Length: 235
Image 1 (cartoon, helix red, strand yellow):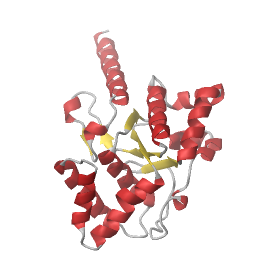
Image 2 (cartoon, helix red, strand yellow; image 1 turned 90 degrees about the vertical axis):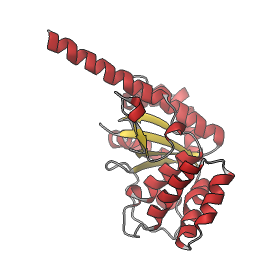
Image 3 (cartoon, one colour; image 1 turned 120 degrees about the vertical axis):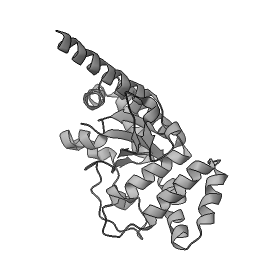
């Protein structure tokens, strides 16, 4: 699938601290509090402004808008202003659970995480571009990581989705989340790498907080595809 999927280590408490509470500041006209929070975390001015702009968009979200396409996506974006996130091309838990529904046991629905003041309906999976996917709670991150390392069946199932070396990137994301004792949120198109001209890659978040391993794998894949196409045309 042609999705640019990213994985964002973040806890429910950080969602409140970095997103839901600052939304109320925006609604109350207290934008200076957002900039103070950004400064407290050492955020550069350029990204503090992007963070503020993301919250401004979030504050305009209507209660009937799909959570995954609004707040969920914005949470993934703002996470990348605070810490690293991870990228794989076309590989997501949302696609895994479509094939193997039993993996839903590793995921937490938004209604268990989100403050009651945000009653937006949610699909709890990737449904299209610019969308949040599933969320793994901190405990579910640890459980999946353990099972991935100890259960060959789990490893095999995940490797079907995260193929061509991408499973190592997912493990890196899960390990980072486990070490921070936070959960893991997936989303699409937070980052859009340009595999031909990497310097033209774009991100709604902080591009430089994206771990490069998955991006390099994507570039290698595209490079091989181009070489194959050239060889076939010459034949």
